[in-house]
Image (cartoon, rainbow, N blue to C red; front, side):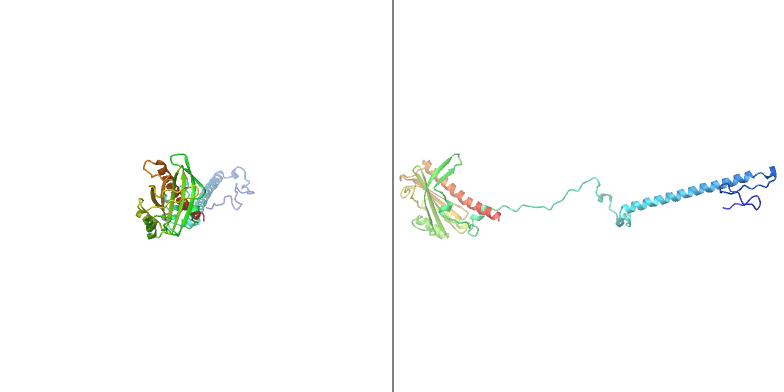
Length: 302
């Protein structure tokens, strides 16, 4: 917008412009300033100032809004700024800011424990040194009883042979059974206490199946291990009636014969004979099982 000059060719007086002068015509009262024109000019300038302030404020507001929008987009990262709203994750897919993700681990499991019986069930695994003095060590046996207390038995002689059918070791009928099932070794040991003695015989096979089959074929009334005397053990059960048993565990079959050193026949009332027979059966089983446990433990630590 432009404004015309008033008062002839003199310079326009602008009250807002430094060094501008008010026009005078020097003729007294009639030459007084045109106050109406001055007021109109002032009002026009005020309007221009208000328009400028309003316009400038709008531009500043627009600039601030643009800067805020750019800052928000920048905070979201460049990779997300060009994506349409439809490509952003749904509300349910956005992780909660207040939740804490639990650590995840791959499932693990401990290796299965080694079975001690596996190591005394076949020749290929049962490789520890073996012998009558190893299976039955020491000069006496102190056995903890399941009923409480303990029992001490003096140890006699031991015997070890690879001829399982030897007539000096077993009765002929038992020798045939052992040979038919491929017995490879036969060990004997004797213990005594209070006039009652027992001989334990242990037959060794290559497999558990052979030992189990041999034990199943034994008739304990006639298929008997012969008693072993010597040292602390006097001869017994050479002609008298004695108590006999047969069992197996792993690749081992074991037999007992128990009776009086006096030569007296054993009856069902002779609890001392049954006791020593049962205890030595249990001890033999434990010794064979310990053998498997020792080999399993050694294999687990390799």
